[in-house]
Length: 298
Image (cartoon, rainbow, N blue to C red; front, side):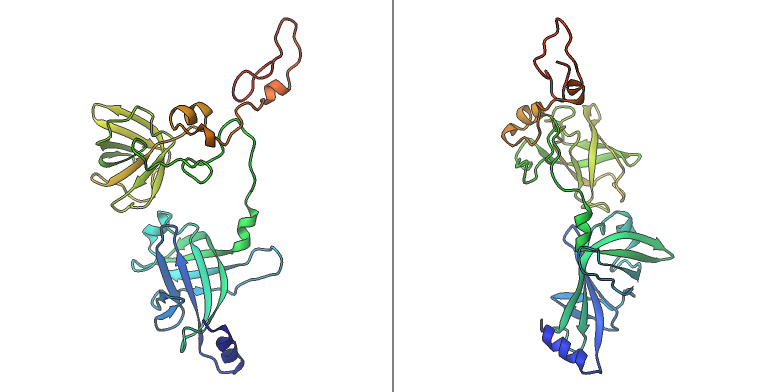
């Protein structure tokens, strides 16, 4: 990239510049768009000219205020489809916006970097809010002191490897009920409720890459019956492959007995609850502190 060359070009008075956007979804898919009338390659990404995408003026300020703008475009199977938007594949996607000299695409300036916010669809087109990096500073940060574990199973704080045998299984969908109930084959070596609270990951079909959270898990004569809390935004049909990952209810006993991972437990099981803090002395009743996880009377 030669930023200086682009600035020199802009200072010349007569310019050949266009705008381009690259979008990286959370599943790793990268898409490129431009308002130029021909395709160009910007920062190693092919930006297509047939998407009809335009953008409003970018609002940028000093300090910690959130940079923001909006992008408009047509829905198409080749780039951004309504099915993918409904399935949530573009939620939180990373966006970069460039000013490019289309005669020399290596000369560009990155004007904006952020994430997709609210997306609306109407009449075969979409409108997407673009939020700057400082938007993430609005999120709560820090750690809460609770009796239950605050880590996510398998993350860098939990450190448990879910890919080891006994905690992950891939199976075939035998039947689907109301979009939230599934009967799976080949899942017989696990106790009932083993996957409750765990991940339901679709591996093939129209919903490939999408994830649900297991609500109920049990084995009966028809197979492994799995219910998820909310239907997946794309259709899951008989014959699709799914992966189940064991669930955790965040309790210390589960961490110790089910996962043998208590050294990485990120909760405070002996913290007193509000009922214990508000208690008062009573004759003939011991006052030795809370006797159970989450608090209790003295």
